[in-house]
Length: 582
Image (cartoon, rainbow, N blue to C red; front, side, top):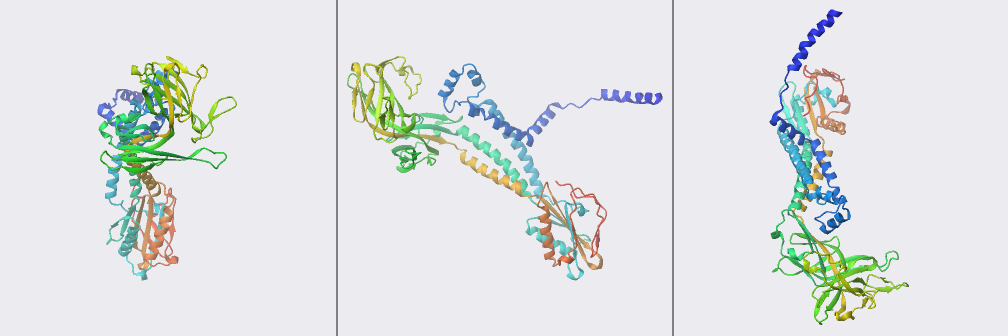
């Protein structure tokens, strides 16, 4: 026993030394790049990157985005000094153009291309190649059956094969007849190439969607503008109240069209009790011109019904009232005149009003207050709006004078007035009281600072203007992706083989088998349909059509011969199964 142990030890020592001395081949830079490319272009990596892209987009909905509203981002950082700047350094306020989001986007783009191109080349070669050779033992296929053509039918083996080929071609199969004049003629047929075509279309369409979205982000732009009745918007940079350009935007992309708001109408609910007074319809009548020399065109702008003009889509997004005022300074000169946009704050179009008059002399003037379309006063002497219509319009203001800070060049919100460095003139807590104006009335400011007149009320609308050159392409590619997905789900890749031979007493024996690539629960139905077609083609009665047997996919029977009540067809020895499904 000890001798055997020693022998084993002696044998193991050289083996261990050989393993220790064996040098594994180095991967090398080229090998490493090839391995990295293989990993990147795998379908698993593409799906992971697609999921990662969706997760990376989540912060864009959690934190304010600088391209949408820079002022909100600035205020957010001020309100959260402990982590606001950290988030800014991680580019979480500019997610969709950040370096890490762009890297994921680019890697996904490369991965999809690396997946699709080799598969497309391989599928093209498969479509041009002939169906696989006829297996020696068709009985091993998932669907298998036999037919017997009687001697009196006068259907030789070659005619039977040609007839079967014609039937399969009518059902969309690509057919190849083999050894038509030999002892055992057969055919191979294949169909379902559209399944892989649909798969390739789906993935190619995903690439198209990515490219379209990227083109929209690079060359598109969006902006907002408030239009009071009678105002005209011209599509230039200075014409926007707020403008968000794409990364590669050029001002030459702006088409010089114009849009004038003629009239804005609102229909309010006057019948329902629970929704009485709520707006139910908005309609803006506008005049558009494609260019300065084009004839004017009357159009109707409604919610969810944009106007297309100059390659842009103009959407109706907001509305309100704009009181028309005239302000004269202490010298009696008109310092400001025109409509002032009132910002909606509450129900029944209760709106806040801010008026800045930097041209007033000798001191600049400022007004803060609210506008009520239908003014009422409750028992606590508080004014409120009882209806959104202009039944009893009222303008209530506090006035200030001093330096408005507009000459410093720092941007200001037009809907806010900083009164810290201003001196109040009118307010409810002062002896002069507040300013309450009805249409057509004028109020004289204290200390000879001037007057303010309430001349009337106009309506205004807010419009969003979007230009996305990749939007139409994204829609087309999205529809193609859906179509490709449907093809890949509902089309099945199938192969059929039919072989004939001569049995006893001059009868012709036919055996056929079907094979599907992947799971195909309708393969048995296809086999039954083919059997019925063959029976009809050769005019075989059902009771003499032979037998049909459907072995399981894991069947291990070796069918050297097929026997039935009418005769037998013996096949020569050969491979034990069909060709590998490619």
